[in-house]
Amino acid sequence: MSLFNESILDNSPGGDSLYLSKGINSDVIIGPIEGVIPETGSSYISVALYKKGSDPEKDSRTFKFYMSERAQDKSLGKIIHLAKEVISKDDIRNINDNSKTLEEFASHLSAALKGATIKWFKLCAEQYINSEGKIRDRLTIGLPRFASQKDVCPLKWDETKSHDYKRLDTSTVNSTAKASDGLPF
View 1 (cartoon, rainbow, N blue to C red):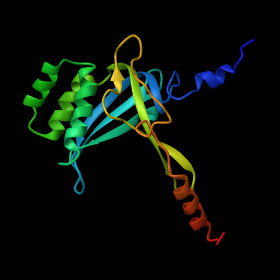
View 2: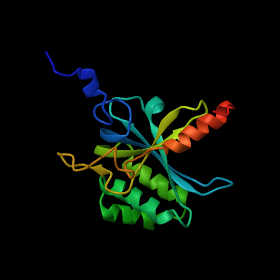
View 3: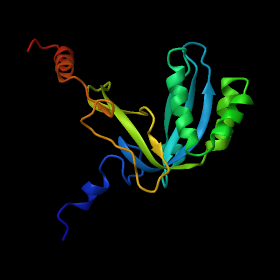
């Protein structure tokens, strides 16, 4: 007989779940990559990710890497880190050299990366209050090193560190809840 219920072990953050979750995820597949230039707001590159064995149409999550002047360096750093886990630096340079627009760059990147499996992928999270007033986690991609192809996972994730898991300030949560119910106490 096991000491712990195995379903608890199987459903810990990241791990072997079929769904992307905060923490270290294994066997993450890169889906379509698109360059988006909206009529208003900042341009961005979207990258879809999903777990091996899950339904890419239903279970993928899309992450946006904004290309505003302030965000571009950090966003490109993340995209290049991900790409270097699959293709060479020279391949990335060729993609950049042969792209005239953001859409072309994303399209060439998608052709090179789509379908590739990343052995280890770290997803961070930040809490937010949804429209029903419940606290939920929003998955984010942290700073590089968040992906690795090594046999043994070198990535670290610590729920107590704000760069890995940004919790809501409980005083903000409580004041929001009090304000939303209309009661003075």
